[in-house]
Image 1 (spheres, each protein chain N blue to C red):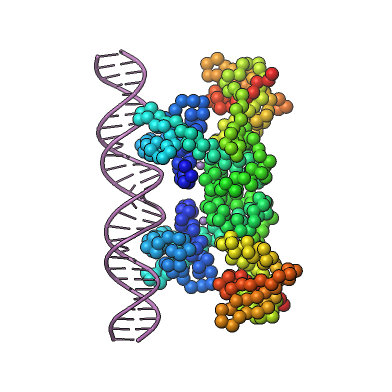
Image 2: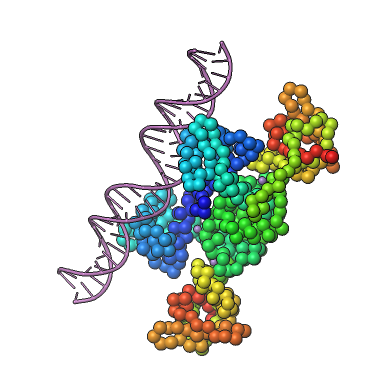
Length: 225
Length: 225
DNA sequence: ATAATAAATTAGGTTTACCTAAATCATCAT
DNA sequence: ATGATGATTTAGGTAAACCTAATTTATTAT
Ligand SMILES: [Mn+2]
Ligand SMILES: [Mn+2]
Ligand SMILES: [Mn+2]
Ligand SMILES: [Mn+2]
């Protein structure tokens, strides 16, 4: 369990973690999609990861994978590093929130335990990354945040943004321009019946903004008490 | 010339640059030694690097290699990143000068042009790394510093430390403890005839220190006017 | 229940960067 | 000028992580 995992394996485990976040298993094709490689290559790797000692995943032919505890720990370690780096780049090096994901995707694999410790300390042990995602602490515990998807907010209700999707810089620049950041308070003005497009008002911002359901699924909020 | 070079190739080029710093060529076995791999593997890689378009090295069977201009540019780029990272870690994240080399050896390959730019700016465009080595500027120019090796300093003369070797943490901790850092002023007290061991006095430090010729070769100074 | 379709796996390669062992080349002392 | 020695190269192989094409399995609609 203490040998170093390759960059690629680290990314596989992180992706499996993300895909199985809300239970269930990750499929070969989902992984192929997010990793940008062929399904055949994924199958190969999953077989390998399920036969290490200890195994990192539980894999059943044709039925997807889930992480073992060893796999989960490895994934959380990478997630911690990824999110710490994102936060560091924004706080200390003047990055915008749309620039950090790609950078962190590479740097996470080059980060030593010491660097992790120093960045964490320099930031005062932050709990959230720039996109509102929780940063696992040094013991790899992560706060469980109560949150609902924007898609599930009732029309007319208020909410406060918890997290936004973080991979697509274009989306982030759009959201940033609209003031839709973690912590922002909003009111859902309407949701059209068939295509579920939503109009919403960010408090303290003049213009209304429009969000489709694909994006809305990935934006979460806490509902006002 | 704009495709990305692999981590390994970046290290090869950097090592060739260092080994040919004062003219001449780098040999297969020298490279095998510093890279910690077999001579056969080095031969293979040198053949490959001499046949790219453009070639990165000029290679003559049994007679070593030197960098082409393309190779030199690539090496300087890595040297800039390496040294910027070392300086950043010391200045901004509380690293000691013996901890930074190993860290930079990895991070240099994960550093984007943007990160390079931001770190450079955050440090105020520094000209030297923690070990006194010059940092090539954004255009990859490096100041030529007039310096002589400690081994060549005359007994009784004074000098000011310019650079110290940077790879071995133990050496660095020893030098640090003695106050022998870039900028420190010293007087050479004696040099024994046969084994060339040197006693020297660091100004403002009570105890004398002793340095052998292997280490002395890698410490450089400027001589007082 | 069957056939069409979609998802996943297997088979057979490739590339990169390493290895060891064997062969060859260069150099230096006689 | 020769032969020993050490340095270097060649030959043949491995491991990681990918690929495409062909095959098999699972799911879904009739
Ligand atoms: Mn990554
Ligand atoms: Mn993020
Ligand atoms: Mn390196
Ligand atoms: Mn240095």
